[in-house]
Length: 382
Ligand code: PMP
Ligand code: GLN
Image (cartoon, protein in one colour):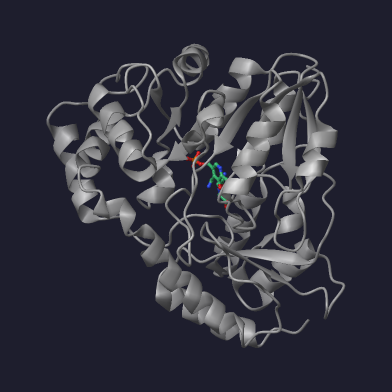
């Protein structure tokens, strides 16, 4: 049998590769982005309660009503935005599904989709599998901010969508009000929709506020906002998230969602609905992660790396081009094997795989592991 690959350039994701290498080498895994500690036992008790109470069959396609309501309440509390939980909130099996369903709902053959470069690895394949063409706009080094003149030049009559990610993976850049205003101004006279990946919405530092695209009146009418409980409640393996979008967009989104996964694990939905009744459970997250970022950055000062503390997300980038010309991929593999600390080479996030001599470390780990990793990193030879 001959199969013509639909994604000939795509292999296994770097996250899978580096996590496996870390495990094979017994290294501290600061590569793939997942918390290295357990979630709140109260959340586990709630899942247990609902599983034992018989909430084990299919949930409604769009999500259980009480969870959709709680998500709408959270959005009101955090962003001051009113959402109709019936027609504007959909529960999905992880943000990856939300991103794919949103792109599939809108993008047709021949459409262009603007992606910022570097971008999270699932965006371009989602566009391509739907017959669209990714048009990459480079982010500005060193802070990975958006150059709006470049976005303007990238827009054409074929542009159908722009995919946004704030706080940004891998750089941690957090969009400003100017960014939101600039995007709105560029698309207001055009038939362009937006997908906004906001999975790190509750992880921003130094008093910086995450500005959801929902907070902008024009963008609110055009945007699919994708969120993930995996990031917010330290349960990435549960694969549960949500998509927030105006009714017409949600209607199209659900047409795809119902044939991708149909619905999402029922006991998890009821448990999360209960868990969300205490807002402190997500409002304390910036403080929780800022301590980890600060601990990690303090230790990094003793290493040969150069870095600027991340504005948001649970990733810290470091550069080493001032000391070595070794490729970021080779260095990430070597550090895993030789000193036992795994990271992600960020060349994989760039459309042309260009090597900028930058590694990404995930600091969503317990302090003991972060300290152990830092001790090892002090001794590296570049
Ligand atoms: N978007 C970004 C920017 C991510 O970093 C991730 C994964 N960590 C996802 C989407 C996927 O989220 P989920 O695990 O909920 O599918
Ligand atoms: N989002 C995670 C990261 O950036 C990885 C998720 C995955 O492995 N697909 O590390």
